[in-house]
Length: 144
Image (cartoon, rainbow, N blue to C red):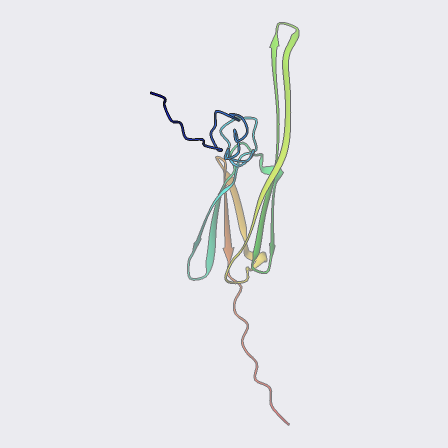
């Protein structure tokens, strides 16, 4: 008796490496390898008169972080430079250099008072305190 086999055009046996890596996350989205750019995870909380932002930025120097505030839009950008070198005696066995940048931009519900905003960076976490700008009083115009 013969065995009947159904043809599957999407079978991985015909083209095993055609779809390989198709669903793999893009480079830089995950920081599993030390040579990849880390992603920035952000927590934003709101109190009555201010926003608090905590951004995880492991392995970034404080001088390489740039925070900009424009009205209610907050932008956080950072540069990462890594140099690793493995030596064996006086001979260099391996030398690797990496540089990259990452950032996040988001908007908040209220405008930010830039003059009273503050930032601290400790243990790879950037903490921003962003006070809300006082709402301007509405002025009623007299009609003549």
